[in-house]
Image 1 (cartoon, rainbow, N blue to C red):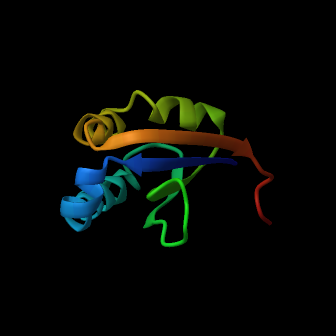
Image 2: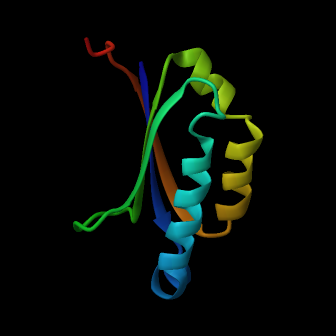
Length: 102
């Protein structure tokens, strides 16, 4: 299994004025991917409430590297990137492999 994490630092004007609406929009977009994006097992999107350099955390689980590779150009993922690109000041992406749980 591959775990894919993305941390986002939002632009101040988004974080201050429009954050709840933007978070809800992104959550809905990611939720719709389950069952459509092959190999995507799980999605969580959270506001980071602790002091941090980042504002949002996306946590996803994929069956394997091929599933993650197929997700990246998938139209639903590209739509998220298109919608959110002007909101993001910085991001950090972390991918790692873990054994499947028994």
